Image 1 (cartoon, rainbow, N blue to C red):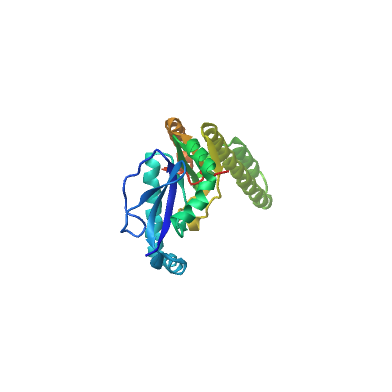
Image 2 (spheres, rainbow, N blue to C red; image 1 turned 120 degrees about the vertical axis):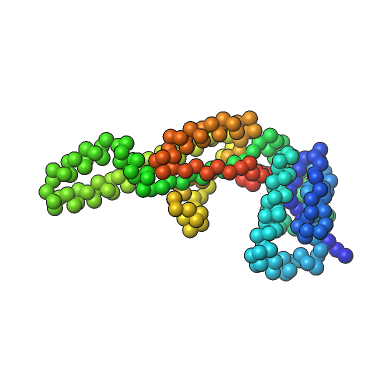
Length: 263
């Protein structure tokens, strides 16, 4: 019976991998020796995982969730033991021969990337802000607002209405500017400590499920030696900005999904 080859990722030639069950939950994953590196793979039954059957499986939300988690968990364990170049979920080849034909010509790029990733960790930072708390804190710490409010009190009722609207608009613009300034300042500090970084798209509340708006989303590749210093900065920011409505969500270390490019 023919078997397809499912590829989890590429690791250094010198690495060994603790055994684990493959995607089908039956056959063990194993290392395929390539030219100067190893591919962590598992075999899949061609009848059960051909293109048509796979499309059916992927459309099953329960199957998709279970197997995507399996893929991530496998890469997470590989990442704990050393550098790995992670592959996308459901990277499948018709045979070991077709895998070799695709991967081995890129040998030097793979080996260079593995060397670059050795001793590094990927971390994600998302910054959220409670706008009500932020507005209260912003107004409290801004003397100009108090001065403008005092000026408005001396106006006639008709002029007060338009002056308040103008002040509210000015406050919103200034609050947004300060949000951006704070997020970029934090990013610049972390970027100076990182080997590489990437700013990602922020998500809406419908995606995050949170009451606070996401104002920043970025990923960083840190050397393991820098992680402790990064943690100190984050604790400092939480202490300074936490009571003003800011929340810092840090997750990691992750497999280097964003930094394993062969370019």
